[in-house]
Length: 265
View (cartoon, rainbow, N blue to C red):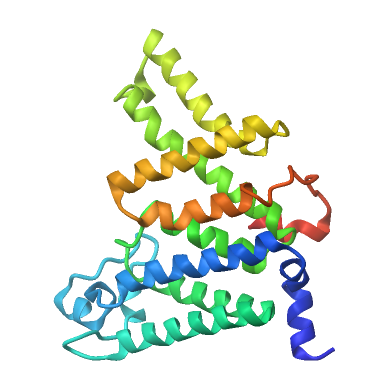
């Protein structure tokens, strides 16, 4: 077995070969990288200048992240924008590979792009909007997971539940964790709805499923008005691809050892 065949077998590229949903999602993930990297290209927070000025921001669990920072951006240097242009070239190559239906190269490109995104997020604590976590999680499942489409759907729905809880509960009652009586009951109802409603995207009732899909589509427009393109660019295409025209109902949940990587993702 040659290297390419082994790579295709280990990362289950045949799933992408045979699934239109995963093929379109490849493009959505690339769009997410383009949006992300275009806003990071000239950031000084990930350069040696930040280390010299003491303005770098490490994660609490990675106090010595400054030892991982070695790039420079204009006007001090060209290494960081040059790297990002290299990543842009990789994205263009992946788009061409999509045209050629070379899904192994598309997969490898997304894998490499994900590694660089993880690196830049690791050396800058400020790069932590929720949509970056979602995009990274979707990429991890796409790259490493088994039964990719199912676990991508589960990842997206889980994100929506967490997102709605964090958004709705504090607005229902400012000190909701300490609320009592009627306020406490209302908060519990809101939280339960936030947990359960996203899972209706899996509803076998087509009307219910489409209504929930429409509701989340409108939510993304609302989020875009309040917070910019971030969440809509990352989550909206994934929502339409995973639960839109090609959605055919929930697959049987797999519990065999063969899909351990999917559950782990």
